[in-house]
Every structure is written in C-alpha cells, then in structure tokens.
Image (cartoon, rainbow, N blue to C red; front, top):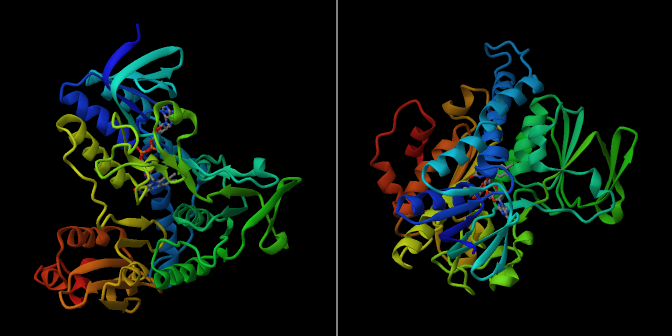
Length: 446
Ligand code: FAD
C-alpha cells in the first residue's frame, strides 16, 4: 500500500518550504521531497550567499571610491577566506531546514519526486499518494546548445570557484551576471559580459541601465552587446569564445560562466502523467496558483509561469497556495509593486511599472528624473553616477513605478514597493518626515 498524505510538496525552497510548514501547522498530513539540499536556491546558491560576497566586494569598491578623500586603499579580497565565510552561512542550512520541517511532523524525502499518475509520485523506490500536490521545484540555469558547452560553468558555480581566475567572461547581461561581474572585478579579475541583445538588463529602466553600464565600465568591466556566443573551445588553460555575427568576435578567458538565463525546473517531473499544463515559462496557473489543467495540483515560486522569479514572489505565492488549499480557492496572487534589485555598486532597483509598460498600456504619466550624483548622499561616499526616475499617474500623482540607481537603492526601493502596493501618491510620501541625512530624505525632491 502506498503511503497516503493530504499534501505532497515537491521542492523545499522559499515556496515549497513555506507551504509544507504552514499546511502541517494547520493539521494536514504533509510530505516534502527535495533532490538537492533542503532550503532551495535562495539560501544555498542564490540570494544569501551572493549578498555575503557582494557585501565584501562593496567594501573594496567603497574604499576605492574614497581614495584621496581620507581613505588609503590597499585592502583586497581573499577569495578563499571569503568562500569559507560564505559557507558558514550556507552549510548549516540543509540539515537545519530538514530538521525544522521534521519537527513540525512533516515526512521529508531527500530525493527527487516524479509523478506516476494523478494521485501518485515516485520518490526513489517509494510510491506515495496525496490528495493535493504542490510543485515548487524552482528554476535552473538554461543550458546553452553551442559547440564547447561542456566548458561552461553555471552561474551559481561562480560562488564555489576554488580561486578567483585572472579573467572571466559572463555570458548574458542579466542581473546575476552583473552582480557576479562586480564581485569578480572588485576581487581583481579581468571581467567581460557578453550580451546577445542590444542592451543588458532588459527588465530595468534603460536610462538607469546606461548609468550602471558606465559605472561598471569605470570599474574595469567590459560590456559587449549584440554579442551572442556561438562557440567555446579550450586551448591549454584558456577558453576561446567566438561571438557576435558569424562568431567573428574572439574573446579569451580562464573561466566562462553561463548566466544566459534560468528556466523552470520541470523536466524530471513527468507532468504529462498528471495532466499539468506547462510552457517554457513554467507551469500554467490561474490566479489561485492552481494548475489550469489539474485542480489537485498547485504551483508556486520560480516554477510557476508568473512574473518576477524572486524570493519575495515565491513567499507571496506560497501563502496564496496555503490559503487556497486550506480554505478553498479564495486568495489571489497579486504581483503589484514587487521590488527587484541588482546588487551592484551602486545597486539598481525597481518597483512597479517602467515607461515602456506605461506606454504600452496607454497610461498617461509624469516623469520625475533626478541626477543625484551631486547630492550630498552620493558625494560624501565618492559616488560619481547616481540617479532616480519616479513615474506618477498624471492628474492623480499616484506612484506607478520607481527606478533607482544610488547608494542604498536596495533599501529605498522598499518605500516605493509599499507606496505602489498601497496606491499612495507623491503627496502622501511628502507628508512623511524622513530621517536626515539619509538616502530616503531625498524623497523630499519628489
Ligand atoms: P527554489 O528555491 O529554486 O527551490 C526549488 C527546490 O526544488 C530546489 O531546492 C530543487 O533542488 C528542488 N527540486 C527541483 N526538482 C525537484 C524534484 N523533481 N524533486 C524534488 N525536489 C526538486 N531572488 C531574490 O529575491 N533576490 C536575490 O538577490 C536573488 N539572487 C539570486 C542569485 C542567484 C545566483 C540565483 C540563482 C537566484 C537568485 N534569486 C534571487 C532567485 C531566488 O533564489 C528564487 O527566486 C527563489 O529561490 C525561488 O524559490 P522557489 O522555492 O520557487 O525555488
């Protein structure tokens, strides 16, 4: 007889872990399967370890920015020590997370799960059944189908390189490439980003992206656009890349990182056996985060075909799934104003709509652009490029979008996330008394 559960969760990241824990707390019989280490991408090979490393890089960058203004440069990153420090955060996670789930009475399985029919999954040599399934398997690095692909290492492996090579090429100009490129450059590597489109960071405001490109180039990072990589080959201890039209541009590096994108982790699930519809963007769900083709299956996080594949989205969608499993479909996912940040130096952050979205939707708006590079908040730390762009609904002044590239943008964007989510206006923000001297005080210029 197969073991029976109320709910079977596949994947233990921010989405799956939350759903399993909350459903068990509500008295449901829950099991969870995890094939790589409990905790998922964010704490093990994503946000958290990256922020630890970016934090070290920021110190080096800020020391350099203050050279001649009272700070004597000379510090450097010791990659091995930094790796050990990073591991002090990641290594305890899998065991700690698994034990925490078990303590809540959840059966945990450290193996991949695969559907065999609409009530059953296979986990190793066990057959398990459940009334409801939650797919929370996240995303994985997109494999590149080019000659020499075996020489590429996936983005997340950057944080496990035993040493910092003298030169690195990042394929793809997305947020992960930019963040790692800044870390690598500040750790002393010769860094290039090769982007196939005509500009990198396509999801972010183009004017601010141009500024970030300028900052990155001044840091020594070379950014090439319209430069799709066609082939990679190994010559001694170097890798040779052919990129751009007909592969006529040649680059050389010690390591090449494939950060060309992430795709939903659905290949091994045998979704066809459980009639769960999916596209290249992930599992197709309705507003209740329920599969459109099988009502016994919910999906949440990066694996669902919803916008903003980020940890806060996974947590929000997970809470929607919990409400709907426990109380019947009642809670709806709302992706309004989810903030996203590129943790570079300075950071680039966005919440809400961009100008292109507003034009496409035919919404009339007013733009407040500020070059903040001469503001006290930038000058006092030697930051040469910084700016903000706030988009307000015409006539009402409602905040529709915020785009920041400045010191503490990663924190300030949360003010805008709140404003957008609650439908606040520029006038509302003007009523708040902000602490001085802080980056947020600049909101008085709105
Ligand atoms: P995941 O955290 O990916 O968890 C899914 C889990 O499912 C994985 O552990 C996987 O092993 C498991 N799994 C897959 N298939 C199976 C199977 N068949 N059986 C059992 N288990 C399975 N987001 C932010 O908000 N801020 C950041 O700064 C940020 N930085 C990032 C940096 C990097 C380098 C990366 C890669 C990602 C980053 N993200 C960031 C994204 C963030 O990590 C994800 O959005 C988040 O982890 C999604 O959570 P999830 O639960 O949907 O999926």
